[in-house]
Image 1: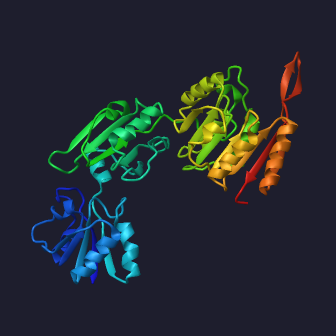
Image 2: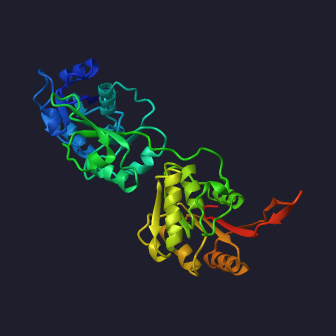
Image 3: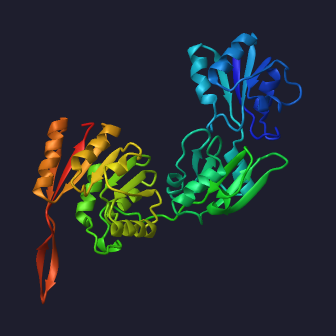
Length: 400
């Protein structure tokens, strides 16, 4: 049996490629979603089977006894298509197959808007978890396939909750159908509307934080009277944690949010959770988040470790303040992810000893560094070096 995996493009069939049309007309068994089987061009076989899951599709092809089978998909076979899940089964059963490309929904929307799409961030929210804020925080417009529980209103509600209610968005509804409709507005406006099941969403890029190496100048931040991790210590913390896009990062005892903000800026696709229990610090944290446009920074009000219970498992954790609950905080992090990277800032020797004792009890291999920074201060016509408080950084990479 020879199987053709075919992309039908948009729903009307007008953008069906000649290659796919020829394969459809040659097929003596066609399998796919019921909606797609009803939209096949004239002249196709009536031997059709409705199936969408890979093993169901394979069974339908095998039971059909066809010599030339065809499996149809909407859009393009290479763009978040079920095609990729069927291919391993075909290869496992040594069934010969070909793949035909099609016109995807991202192409249809770009054409309708008369815009190029090669610089868009492409995201699927079709039946999977999707972080809309992380997507728009990458400095490019973000295109979303919608579906399941994450439709246009839900994705736009995520943006609104992050403070991006004014972000311009465009909804493409029923693309390529006679009732195709484009709706432009803000995320806040679209969050309050309802749309049909065949929708895609384009959100413009969110305002971006500064692009520079870690260790931003201290006077960039709104500080108030809340203690703040200083510039050179901050740079060392980011180097120790090594944040990556797509990761979950915790900053426990966030204070003014200087660490949180730089983590969010260094990894725009990451989700950063800043946990702080003091009201004055919480206010400064929100102000710095807004000032630097770090929309992927989530401010969590509460005392750790209780405030950590509902957070997603972290890939990396910085503890800048523990309120006496250091061991419980580190335990909560490692319970959620035993491989999490840890960095603890210790000013007092007692905190250092507690951190090292925790590592010994857990069988962890900590690395300890002391940072002692002095800066020149004017004294009349002279400049004298004035020392900042020395800081110990205890870092644990659990995958070492």
